[in-house]
Length: 245
Image (cartoon, rainbow, N blue to C red; front, side, top):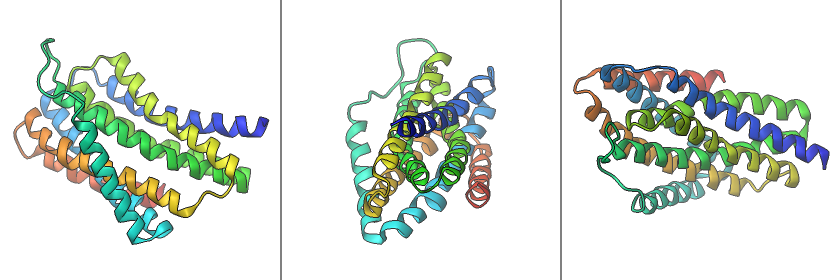
């Protein structure tokens, strides 16, 4: 029981600290120009595309095959389309608050939270095999969660969300990793098909949010090519991360 509690705590800490640090990095930017925010929004969009296309989905394909992965992607997109109907859009009556960007940040946070659960499963299953494997996976995934926290925090920041809420939302997005670590350690070997479905579900959700929400909104922040350059830089950075981390 003590070991199960310790593994669960490690999962919670790595998930919440990883995404939380991404939120903190966005908060400490101060009051950047619209040009800089457009670059940052493009960069984080590129990071998310890389995470999905070069990390999440290939891993899902390797674990559970093409059919289950495609089913998970379609399911992920479909669920986000349904959730979208319940989140308001437009410009708030409060000065400096844009509900379109806040909506994008919340939707992306949901996708990241879903993604963090199978990552927690990996950590818990790793601890079930050996402590060294579990700790190594926890450290790698914690670092990996930082740019995801940034990707979630940037549209919230642009939308006018206050700093405390940004930090709170990014920390909350990391909590499912602890839940996954609990389940992974408790059950030991999770069904590969279940992990594949979780990964591809999260990949589909995040891909739709990035392509359907974040990328179109970059031009609302600043008209010009600079956001596209930021996006390409983000994709390249994501590729490097996928191969190094």
